[in-house]
Image 1: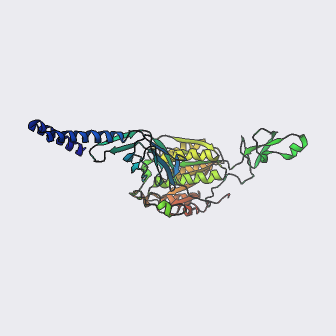
Image 2 (image 1 turned 135 degrees about the vertical axis):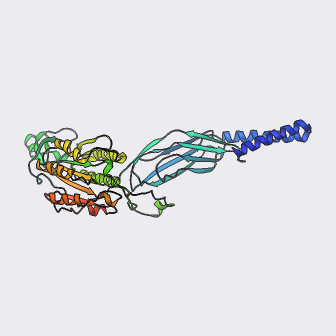
Length: 427
């Protein structure tokens, strides 16, 4: 508005000069300046009238290491053209460059553009609000118009394929069944019943159908590999990290490269732990296993075991926003919540804690028939933290299946080789 103050001073001087001199040309100058002010003020005001901004994406979810695409349309609903309009976006998704200046927007026309952003951080982000700014051709006046509408974007943690991760099981496939009915097809058939609309054809028991003359479906029970629990340690005092900032987006990098971008995790035990937990959940849910989840980031996060894509979405939404603000030690979590686990359950611990009490607690659960696996993140390789070698030695001495992850490791390789040599029992 510096120019507006300048023109106001000029108008005041012209007014004083015309009143003092009384000359015709002085009044003509005053009228000219007044007309310029009126026209430019109206132009700047009218330039924001009749504008609508529409933004949208196919889905409001993305994942670290993948691109999020958003389409925007600035439409001019009035008959008068807009000389220029500045779109200023206040989204908090790192690297999401929506802001731009739209020039020469004709009447009853629209300007469209697409933004494709590489997601480098997990979390829940706000898309918007947007502020529209415009002015007159002389740059005297500028007006802004806020658009308060916002949407949310959930960026799930990255996942990696881990086909080499094989936890122990309570029984080999085909062993004792868990007597609990399930809508899923398993290897354990408990009986037959009349066909219900919606039953798939592979549930039909054809010998009974031929004998009775009507469709008969099979009933299933969960097998001994059904329940698997993920315990993610989010105690704040055991975490470590190194300084990290997201990389600046390269111009048109998404158009120049093919395939998925290379995944680069922040050097943080929290991010490694969340990524490992998400990868394990995806791995076992794709194997049609029932997966449950427990963590104490700030408040207790508890998800009952379940199967399928819906369970994976539920887990991703929790992991996307989880922060290490917990105060409950892992050994205490195992002592309290581990006591409720049924026999033959598989429990996978993801932790960076150097307190060997949690290893002792995991051994105690094994004595009760709970099969435990430790995924240990060496915190001292990320930043200032106690040495991890004693904890690793304790894990190896206990005979528990365990995997060691260090900063900068290839997670797929690290989660394919057990450091205790016990990771492939029962596989």
